[in-house]
Amino acid sequence: MEGNSMRYEELEDDFVNTGVGRVHCKMHDGGGVKIVFLHGFAANTRTWANLVPLLPDSLGIYLLDLLGHGKSDAPERAYSIAVHGRAVAEFIERKRISDAYLFGNSYGGWIAARLAQGDYSGGGIMLESPAGLREMFEEWEREGSMDEHKERLKELGSAHNIKKHVVEGSKEDFENWESYLTKESLAGITKPAEIIWGSDDDMLDAKYADVFSGYINGSVLRMIDGAGHMPHNTTPEAVRDAIVEFVRLKDHG
Image (cartoon, helix red, strand yellow):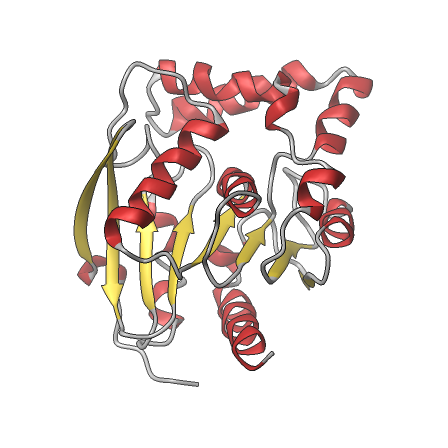
């Protein structure tokens, strides 16, 4: 394993203007493979603090604050998956890192999966406990728990000082069928893909790991025993291994 001298606090801050608002990131240009990291709802770049010191120093890493989160702008506008995707896509274009991999946790995984269905020229995607699968929402509807999940989103936003209009805008995708990830849409992902899921995820049932893996042709599935919804935070060594091995698999494949 390559050595690493990176620390989250020592990463360079950068701001990039997009058509939907200014996006903040913390970055390190190691000259090698580039990875754009997309956090979950109500998180920010600090969610990756435990993972960063374990990553190879040769990586180029870009930790984004999603629009409405962290130090990124929070304009009064819609906060759909499509809007977040536009911000990320324009960030990648303006940074001239079109070959970058995408790594998305939860809500960030939903965004990454949607981006990979479009004009995406990067190396591949890594989805860690991704949200957005149609079957998830259908199950919540059948159980009558959709409102409960919306309330949980609201509580997360409040606990992490996310502006009310950002929370309300984000909830709209819960009932927007056009935003859902489906068998058909995920089958359209042609780039290499890895699914990472904690066996003890208490937010998004780990049973959906097999569904994602089955829908994305040729994807690699990596279950992390004992990990919860954010394995990168609680079991960073395992996630580091998943990242490094996936990138090398692709590079040698």
